[in-house]
Image 1 (cartoon, rainbow, N blue to C red):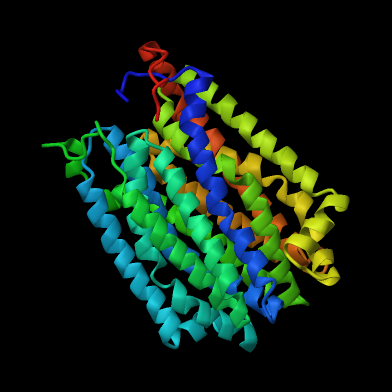
Image 2: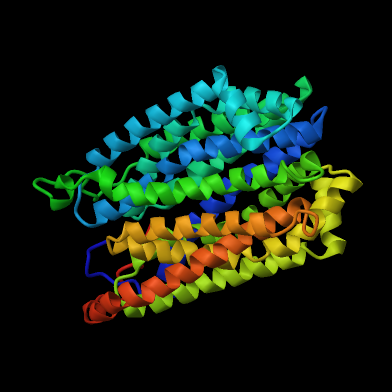
Length: 445
């Protein structure tokens, strides 16, 4: 799309955003699929807890690479070249995978899981075994994210959804196929990594006809990709560190194993339903050009967020949540009792997450990644402060974990909205006169 083209129609937004929303749904389907498989292991509580902890550590490692998707899309749309972003991403991915291998195969794993997270010996053993399958994930994430950004810049969102769909199918087949072995946290890790290999390969070979990937003497190419990416990497790193922080809090409660297992299930359900709003960052990067398009895209995104919130509230009704938790995830009555009260709190995820994603996209598009990093720091600071202040015996189990996550999102969302009103909105209003060609986005593939 040319810089002056302004998408004003709801149909254009739907054609651009629907494949991205489907991608998020398929992506977050990973968690409930793996939770359902692990819950059918020989020792489900230990398997769920071990995988939850291992994946949280792996998430911290591969989280910085997720920003490559935004950076690649934003730079290509602004006339930069693809190769500097790709080189940076792949080098960082290789380095972080090496760190993951150290956690998996050396005493670093004991230090991280036992000392930092604070899990017991049984969960520690499961987590280390899971990391022996998860350590390649950071490099695979670098490959996937760089090419997903290229596809977003070329407005080819359908291949992204197709790749994620293939990943989800393969992941489910592998996870349930391996249950014959008795299962364990390693089962979820193996299935996840195989799925990532499939997804990375598909997006890497998808074409972007009409998109010029390399530019001569581009101002953006002379800028340091690492310097621009650093605040965004901090943001995503802290996002993925959040479950690890909350796990560390839950591991120190009176009944840590049930709390960790129930929190893993509630997070899987909550973020799967909230997934359609997760791509609002790409909508604000690629579609917002002025104050008029800002209002329209924000309104369409709001509809998506409220619809997913309603779905979560419906699932949180006791008459529905108990069969879902007990049948789909094979939880016993005790785990259902721990997980159930947290689902109504998780209904706040879609709206708060949508606000976060949309406004972060505005700051990336306007070249202010530092604001994004600052918001993430405030969110994590708020979570830690709340964890220290709130007594564990007052709010416990999965409800404590979800409540901390919601509070952090509230703090971050308020900060981003206020900063956008002061820094971004004046620029968008100034560009309103540039709104031309209302049908420019009708041809999105």
